[in-house]
Length: 248
Image (cartoon, rainbow, N blue to C red; front, side):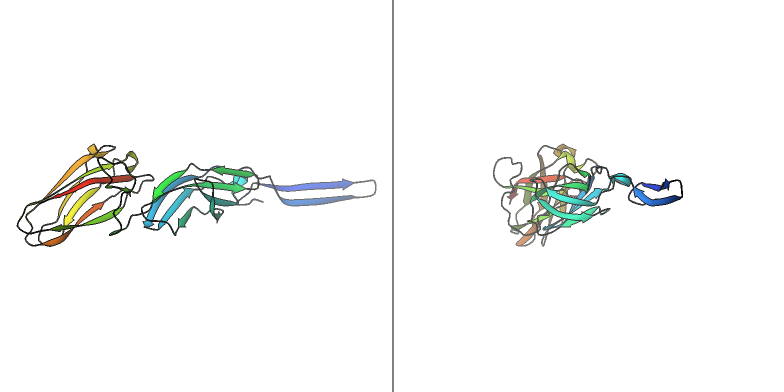
């Protein structure tokens, strides 16, 4: 007989014999002792919104190594939640926008536990929120913005008609963003202009790259939208915008 979670010894036969008689006893489903489960691997993190992150991991234990439960810890050691055996994700809610969180997964059974590596991810910043400094790599001042790899952020840009409009900004992304992912970009749109986009290049990996949007001459006074977008869902992916300048 077997079991999905434990390696079973099929049957133990015990025979007691004396001069007058013998008795035979059978013990079925005799389980071997549990062994400390293998460490899990966090396979992805995804910011569902400005207050949620989905943490996903790989279950690496079965048989005698089977976990009884998974435990999700913060990097500072606090237990956040427990998940039943074979569960491979957790949606964490109630988080702060554009804030980095670090977690690890503990596979646990009665024999002991094993921990995954710590992984960090940042919630989405949300749009039209406070545009204060985000404590990210800066160039010349405090106006630096740091984002999770697939974030979207927008700024309002008041402009006037009759004068040529040029917007410049510095952009960079980290190695974890991934060279094959679509590079982060800036897009200017709104009344009185044609939408214009410009993307970072490979030169922006771990180094500041200057992007320039030549928007032409607005046909009317308006408040335009400058939008930045990232396209990487790789764990740890980040990109940054700094020194936005509007010239007209």
